[in-house]
Length: 364
Image 1: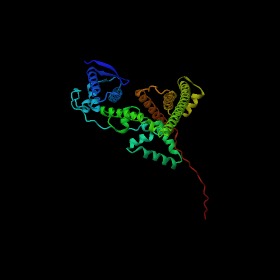
Image 2 (image 1 turned 135 degrees about the vertical axis):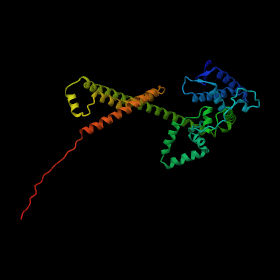
Image 3 (image 1 turned 180 degrees about the horizontal axis):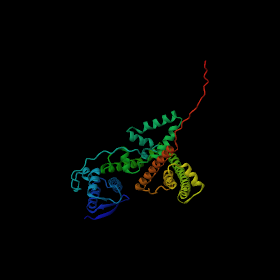
Image 4 (image 1 turned 90 degrees about the vertical axis):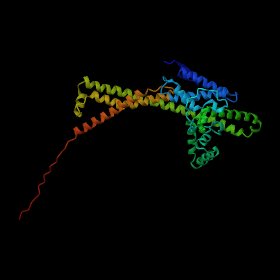
């Protein structure tokens, strides 16, 4: 029986085995000692912890699972050992016996706001395609000129839908570099040196960058306005979906409940008419129930979708509920289809027409 420890790693809550917790602490302490430059070490450690938390989340199927030595060793094999970047080999002695070879990460599309001119879309595409951003910018300009401005709309869509590379992990994913200790430290130092160079050269570059800075500021403001308008539009669509779906559901429930009640208790003209046209001998309450599921479930899904548009952090109804709704909807569709075929078969009939003609016959 092993004890478990609750930890908060980069803002994410984990249950971790006590032995794994001790090893994780030693690993992080070893990383701190391995950093060649103490300047900015806190930021580097935060990025490394965020990456470890991301890897833990990928390996755990749900939030109630416990991080064990097995998951920790797999994460360490991806992140790398601190001694890989130092001469001292005794810095971390708890290395997994057969560490897996670190694999290169696949590139992911992000907007590169560090090298942006407008929104960083071209820079991000340049990293993703492996070409210089200047060629991507020329490509956008040419396509915009020859498409009567259609590609401006496409650019705006990229701007809205593609996330910006904000964290060090995102920037490494953008360039396709493995997210390990060495690359996180290197990327942080590159950013620090870039800021330092800008401060040193501010007097020389301020006139050259004035137009670019003004353009970036303008387009940042424009992007914020467009994003706000898009959010308002999405919430408006959500309200429409909620009103339409809720009205339809209420109407269906009232109408079909009334019809089903007539089928159980009612008599009179309505039941006489139904029995006259119905040849399947299926109770009307059962037909009403199938109709409610077949028509009502899609509108219920639209209602949930509308709520999610209004409330961004709304929790999902859960996979089991989705499966049950899908099975009920599919079963009701099949049931109504079978009833429709039976109704059509019962009302179909074969007919025969006999026409007699008297033909004059001449004798002679």
